[in-house]
Picture 1: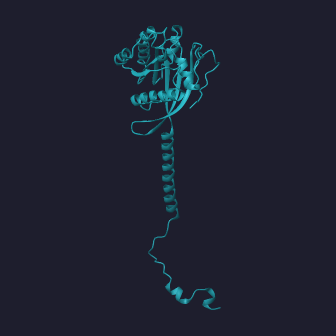
Picture 2: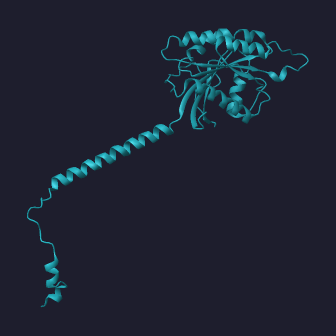
Picture 3: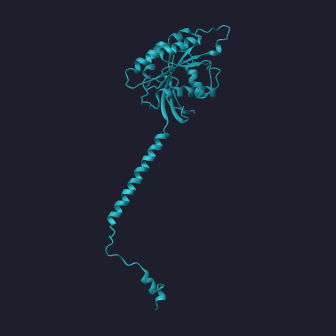
Length: 269
């Protein structure tokens, strides 16, 4: 059998490199160690990137409460924001009611921020105020509503503000942004109704008590989308002041609204 039968001639053998006896012999254990070290580095980076991505995508959680005297429109605001419906007559809230809203806003840096908002509708009657003040804890924002046709509801604004401040002063690093809102602007032109609180008075109180002026509205006449946009603007104003603060977990006790047997968060956005 000739060399051609093997497909390799004598000349090819002559051109093959001759092993250098001084070359280091590969260490298989060292190669495995280097490979494992690189694999460990890749796994750590993968975990870090996944955690960073999860942190970025997690929505900002806020707890916002609706406060103010009874029959000034808190429940109407709450229901219209939740369902888009308005009812002339609402049963007074006993205890509280709660819904969850998922919204997005664009901050001043043109960045999109996602929010998970827990909105609480609280009782305004004096006999339930001990329950209401309990839910101040952990709140990042409060929408304080008064009736522009009822002076007494406006005179109570300072009481509500002091109640929030006194409750939160006992909690470290607690800050609640209060937005003052005048309701029932649609009734000021009625023959039998008369404005008892001017917008200028409300702005003066905001400056005095360090509140944000949320404007005068008609919950009855405002459109659903317009109300949602208004609520988003309130959330943005809260965010601009306190930033990305997480809501503290709070146990819901058996003081829920008697119209429902349990409080169930409901996403409507």
